[in-house]
Image (cartoon, rainbow, N blue to C red):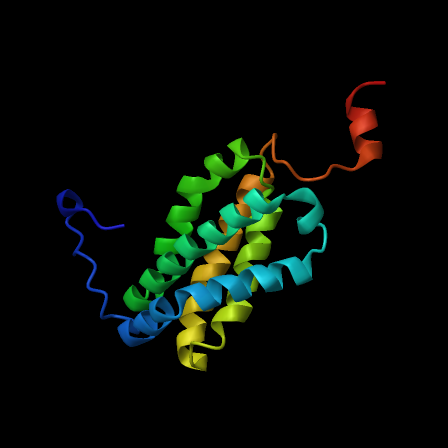
Length: 160
């Protein structure tokens, strides 16, 4: 992220592919719906773990991640998505959303965005999504993540 006191230039949003970012923003709702469909196809337990309100919250979150992906593609800077993921990870922990589900969201967004981007533009999107997945994997290791634990290891760690 740029900051004037650090002497870094402001973002230009013309370094990457601003036209591709505009295309993604114009079909945001369709890409978000398709991302959620792919996400449910990849992990069938989502419909059991989340009620309708939880799935709607994920759909709303996909919309925000699409905007951050568009910023990343327009500026040729994967930091727009990874920094935002780093900022919102505590909120997902509070909502008891496993970081594996957010990584699944990013992988599903990768597949859904292939209909919008050309292969060259998709390379920038893939770099941003990979950076976001790396943040999810880092937060996954912190205690308190809502993922399903191994019952044998949980028994051993309880000291029983």
